[in-house]
Image 1 (spheres, one colour):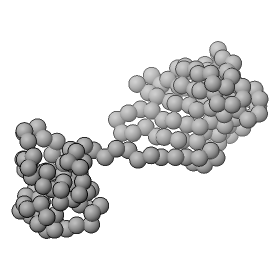
Image 2: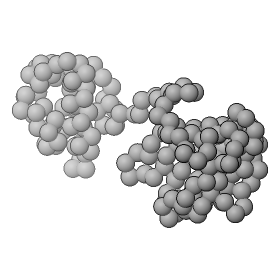
Image 3: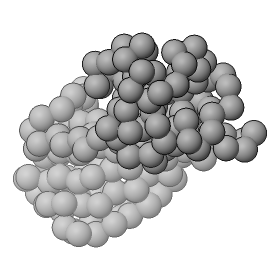
Image 4: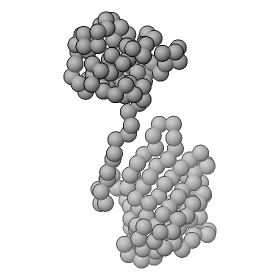
Length: 184
């Protein structure tokens, strides 16, 4: 393996897979035919592992070779309708349920919105550069900048600046939407 081996990924993968298998350093090293100190170094992110060493470790752990070189893929997450952490408005019959928070170093949050007819939810400006994307799922609503909201129908999509005052006002009962808030 060259000097640019993703040692941190390999180290984390080794610790994860050894833990998953419930094996000690000694046992994995024995099965792989390598020194325990070599395995310990690799798990701490040190060393310069060869293809042969990583291959032997993957066989000992009964995993694919690529599992040592790639970070784990995200797990599937399901949040059923009417589940999840809902936040309610004080001024309107409006709730927002955080469905997916922005991962580190990204600025995107995903919400499921439920609104009933009434005065509507007026939002103050968010951080500069914020854009909100809404897909109306059911019902009918006025959505967008407070001074120019757009009437939306099921399946309609709108994107608008979230860094200005904006509105989400249900015009009929059972109005729901998916909202993505992103900041650049």
